[in-house]
Image (cartoon, rainbow, N blue to C red; front, side, top):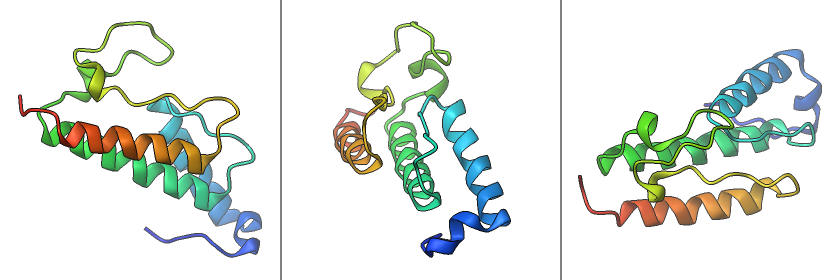
Length: 112
């Protein structure tokens, strides 16, 4: 995936379109994305979420079972495989740190 890191990238229509598509993918997974998040932030979020999901699946987790419906209150099959919720005032860096810790914990989960 191409990294967006030039200050002018945010104003590039193609970068804006791709960033919006990726932000929508994150939102469908229940991850909040804010207007203040840059295209580079969105890429970092996608990468971290996809890594978490790969680890959950490698440990035998089922994302459809472990994740409640969007904004739902269903209990996950295994709470350790639940994607952390990003707080409204949480920076991308802080959320990724928490998500990385959850990914590391999931790596230690016994295989199902």
